[in-house]
Image (spheres, rainbow over the protein chains, first blue to last red):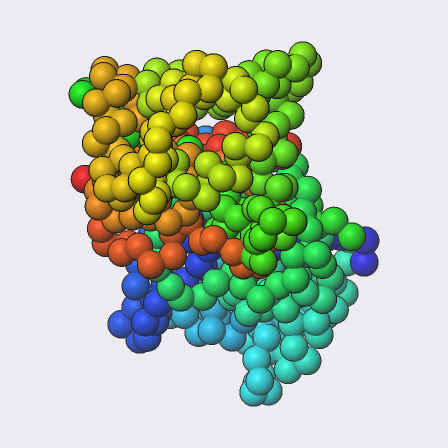
Amino acid sequence: MSGTVKVDISMSLDGYVAGPDDGPEQPLGRGGEGLHEWVVATEGWRERHGYEGGTRGVDSQMLEEAFAGVGAIVMGRRMFDLGEPYWGEDPPFRMPVFVVTHEPREAIVRGKTTFAFVTGGPEGAVELARKAAGDGDVSIGGGADVIRQLLGAGLVDQVRLHVVPVLLGGGASLFEGLDPEQVRFEQERGIGSDGVTHLLLRVVR
Amino acid sequence: MSGTVKVDISMSLDGYVAGPDDGPEQPLGRGGEGLHEWVVATEGWRERHGYEGGTRGVDSQMLEEAFAGVGAIVMGRRMFDLGEPYWGEDPPFRMPVFVVTHEPREAIVRGKTTFAFVTGGPEGAVELARKAAGDGDVSIGGGADVIRQLLGAGLVDQVRLHVVPVLLGGGASLFEGLDPEQVRFEQERGIGSDGVTHLLLRVVR
């Protein structure tokens, strides 16, 4: 259990990780899809989804780094619900995924990915994910409420923040309500392409 | 009048350009000073203020670019009031500065800098600044309300956004209330040091 816990998420210039007025028609809210265009375009993402081609360079490198060394993933129930229809029979994670939920549910195995449902809150999910990851890292994919809660609880070591040059005007705010005295960062790197800028931040204890 | 109008401002991770609870004791709000540490540390800034030494590299380059080609500056009244005690008899601008205010006031000349007070709102100040700049660019230094109003009016060509890895938790939001459909960006560059990441954004018409 010596790995790190890292958040990996795309955010708009105005601080949202999903847009306003989300619903079945637009699960990521108005404009929210635009946050993920950079990742969907990369060679690494396309390969994990069984397609050829795609962009190389810094964005693809960031995606590879996101998965490198990761032994387990934590995500919110909403993110699971949104993604499931798209992931198909061989989801791109290929490792244990712990889904934070209020309703107990049987685990699901799909290809090389296991989805286990955890009712002990984000902290409980991270604890299980750390065990499952062994020496590997744990990656937190969202949503905003899971990340905010873990940052507030001091359970995150690193934030990989992908700042996309769009405004969303509302939606799920990543940092709102956190105590600036308690949640502090040191920047390790800031590097961009023409569609996104990647900030690698270490959480200061 | 062929120059561009560019915004140049530092912003926290959670989207604020000044912190909460501002007042005489903390004119930039709680934590707001931290937004400008990167610029104060650069060689270029120190030279303009009559000091030696300072950091070189990407941050200093960004400061040099901020002034390069600029023929006039627009700022809000609050920013003028905050800065005036520090700028002394030879303010670092060394060009015409147009201050947006509600109260008419005589112009001030200090060293190579002229401060003219404009009651025609941010748009009126930009119009005068464009004339004064001739073929040069106009730089908008803040505050948030001046920038928001000019972005909303479609009067900004470029935003040079310096994202500082701190949370402020409240204060003056740079983008709040803007219409995401109306204010759109294309990223020209994203580049960082260990204290700040610089996003160069072109406003899409």
